[in-house]
Length: 424
Image 1 (cartoon, one colour):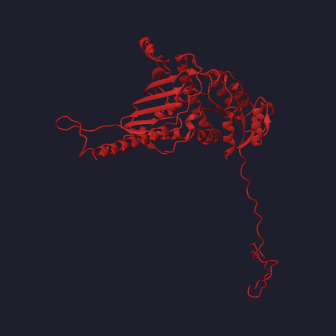
Image 2: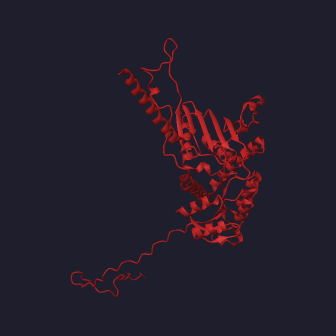
Image 3: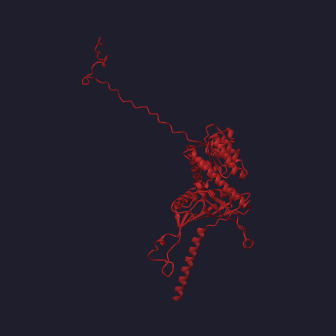
């Protein structure tokens, strides 16, 4: 028996036909949609441990729009309490008192190599799950333990050489990189105060592009007959070496005032790298950066140097150029602007390590190598000579030169007037 035909399905059951031409619509006024903006992510909370050099870190974190200064950690001195009050943040006398929402700690406390407990403090913070940015110096064993602790607790640790992040040094390093893309470095000439050699070694490695291979000689002795002629002891210890495969001449002022160790360096850093095309110089830690093109000209048929005429276009360049920024900071500007900016750059590097943990591996390996070179250097030059000089007397040399020129012009005018009088 055949199946009955399927009945057509109704798709309009319960519906009334709609005549759009006659339907009256009820239009409700449009209501503004309630928008709830997504709150910005919370800024990383930063505490600073130590309030001597730590004052630079405090100012840096306070002015950094990418972090929140959340406290000061110290032993509880009146100066530290004043720092916390100045910045309107809590003061803690131990890391056990820190709240659980602290993300980063800046440790500006001397480590064991300088008679402090900064390395132990850093390890305790790392064990609390807090990322650490630590001011140099550390003994190689202390550094290895800090890196091991960071790996164990899954946090990031960065040793801050500080000076390589300064704007003038960054300009020097950027210029060196541009030169390296075209030519190989031929030689490095470097000078530093005794307490400045760690960042100097870091800067040399970055300027030549690598640290290995490296080696340092024993210091060159001063011949007794030369020492006898000098009115004062030789301030610099001379070494030769190789860093990143580039020959190195190094001078270190291995002297220290026991009661005033932060002063009395003749200079902090001076660094010059020779390339085939010229010499790039960091005249001082805080600039300027100089470029001195290499003097070279051809010879004529008689073998004499060609000093003018066709083919001497390269002689038209300045003998030395000051690379921008050409404005030289005052020491007050160094303290108020350049140094805090260096810390903010280091904090940004640590935050990048936190976002990409692979970065911290290379940073740790770099610090281990610089620390090994530093240990070899300090072992070679030995204990610093103790000195107790008075405070240096300021000399306003630019004003003296200007006055001297005025005197010379006045004498010249008077002399010309006298000659004219004699003729008359």
